[in-house]
Image (cartoon, rainbow, N blue to C red; front, top):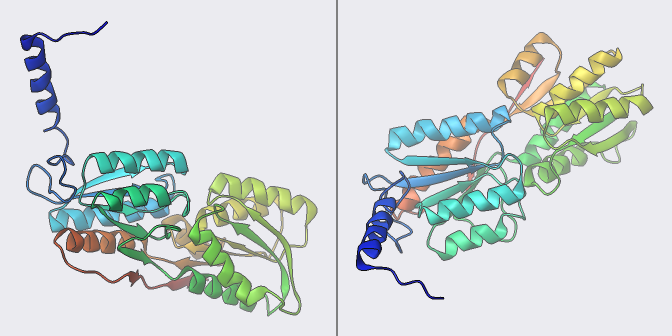
Length: 311
């Protein structure tokens, strides 16, 4: 049975729809994907893999500070390391008609379709820290993860006198950061005489998983001399497992230089961490987004310098 709206009801609905279209800091006129927010500011979406990781909190904070400086509305969405949730949150940013989306992928390949959807609607996309596989973006802003892996591998071998029994804790499978950091590390340690890789297991960039995975590895290997973890969260979890097991003189190298990791280096618990400067990645991201929204060109790759924080 068809339902017929009276003129009064239709008028009320039309008014409600019009009112809703004006709500929210990221709203813009329909059909204009590059339109600024209602207050005249450019609106930028920031899709972060997880805010449970201090690294990405720093990235978000760097982006927020720069957005305030640039007069940009910034809408941040947190995927909580769930690729499906990230896709849904990016689709929501597309519906809000933001001018540019800054994306830090949970899974570099899984975001390809939603990135294509955004660009097909005229929304520029910039990837941060982790690249996008299978879709083109306007720019990629990151440290050289391969070079960072090389840096970590060289330091670890120097610490061990050029040889030793080592463990590798890998990040999330499918993420460019895990793949590239591992690639750089293996350029240094593979086929190196006197170096034995006892175990190589994923712990998903997570501290609790780093702890549990390292505990399991230690059960079968009491003679570990060195550990490289693809990020600081896993490295700190590994340190806790090593200390609980009573192992001595195990060199642990992380990646990111989060505040907890830097403190652990100073305390002598962590041997080293590769410093990425996440706040700078966020800052550069907003700067690039503002230029793109203003119709300017940006470099396809915008590098962020690396440093090594060590004992």
